[in-house]
View 1 (cartoon, rainbow, N blue to C red):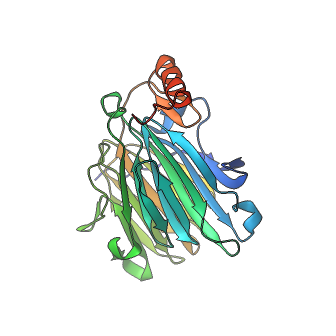
View 2: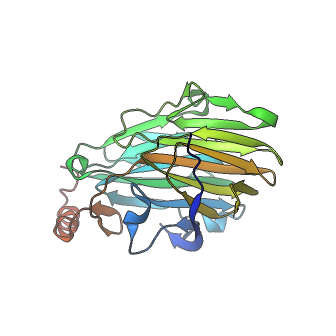
View 3: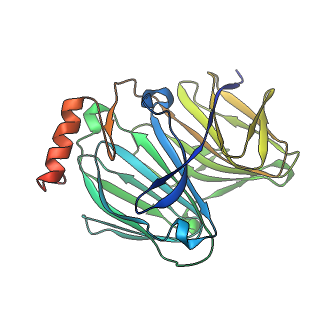
Length: 277
């Protein structure tokens, strides 16, 4: 096996989205191809309802997929297709926007802790205008793998130690693991050598080779077919891996296409009320 090491670390930064929701975001502004096929990762984590109560009122998407994973609290999803999802702690929503989705994501609470993530995953040109699709999974549908030294991994997508996550029919063949390790514990994770692989630490700190990755940091890993992770603190992380698309990216807000002309068409379609037709 060829061990991957940390190629680059990206710091998350604070920003607002939706109706004033405070989030911590990782994205390579102006160069979304850098983490291909991943576009951005948002984390919401707050005990103050003022940080999240506005939620994300109805808004459009085209050309990519959104993945929402809740750790604490709850959100309600509604879309133009008639889907209504109630994302409680431990639940996952994988939405393929395709040619167009209009949806809302609103908190189901007005107090207490809210903690979750939204990942954007690109689609290749040939799949950008496919019909929209929605997958939702309860915590009971998402398997866990017990690791050595008291650690565990929640398998949302892909396979780890013979356990397969419930997400299916995703063109980029992703792995999405929530790995939690007590201080001093370690884990070896096999990975497709051709896939882009990222690790986002949302609690504690870990070591990958000689490099430390701390809370709020995303590590882009080098080529290889295995990753060894050692927790230097009580730690938790998202382990993300998927096939790169290797196509140009044009984006504007909620639209991710291949050319500026396609972006302009998406804007026009939304303005004319035909985005989802």
